[in-house]
Length: 120
Image (cartoon, rainbow, N blue to C red; front, side, top):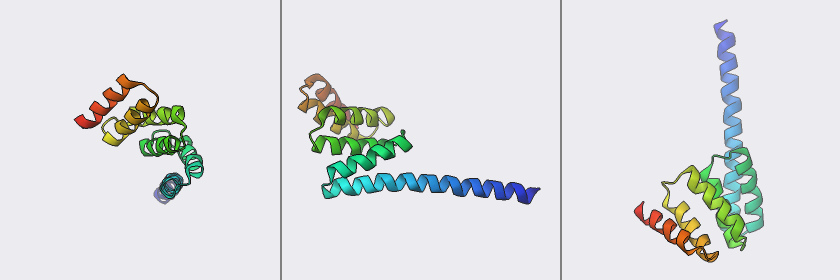
């Protein structure tokens, strides 16, 4: 009976690891595409990563960067807001939100986010 439980637990662990590594590779592919300048490909992969793991602030952040670089400012703002809401202790997330807020002429919000980034 112990052997059966061990096999079940091991199988579930391996299955979980496969899911996590699969999600990680979606994010990593998206980040690599962003860094190489493939903004549309990056956005596609990063959207998929955020669907699979909605709590991954890094995917949301790079999705925001991809949208911002592609001049999709409203989408970028949404992505940066999500990143900040998931992890408000990362200065880069606040900086991204400050920058897109500035571009969207939301000066008070841009100022608040810039101050938050500097405080970190």
